[in-house]
Image (cartoon, rainbow, N blue to C red):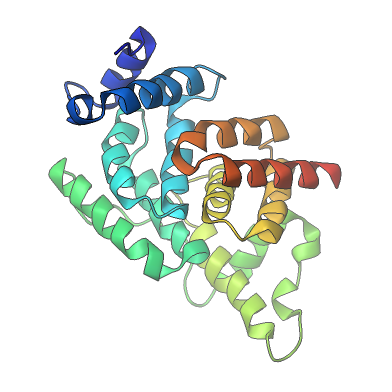
Length: 251
């Protein structure tokens, strides 16, 4: 077995002093996976470690990789992701994945933080109230997606108009208005939720365009896709790339 020096060094940064039992039970697999994920992929571009791990955490939420999420969360902390940022990633996932999928991750992040001696609850990040969340949500939508989102919450057929209302006051007013993450970070993790979840290509095109509108350029999104390939595989990664190219073609 020949795991590269670069892969070993990166693994040690993620998990200091940890020796995986897979080295004994699955040595050939670990050689290929570690050399690919922790040498070839991470060495491919200049995406910083913190951003990489935020994307990985969001991607693992999207694909329901709960065991890998729990394993990678301490590594994310070792690369600069804060407890507040990790919690915000999990909270925002509810708007895109639903509590049915996110509940195990909320439990997991709390367990890991408790193990690391982090006192819960963390400092509050909410900036809205039930009285102003609609207005604040509309502002967030317009800041991210443009002035065309003005009065979006009033749009659509009467029988389904309430869903657009909820997209504004709940999805954006409750989550995007929170501190802890920037708009650029929030749109990046949304892109990861959607790409890893699959079956959300229309929304993925829309959020790829939103990412590019606020400064997460096409080249950046391709780096994010590339870094997450080991965690969701090629089909959904290629779908995400197609959506990015489609969004870029509409600019």
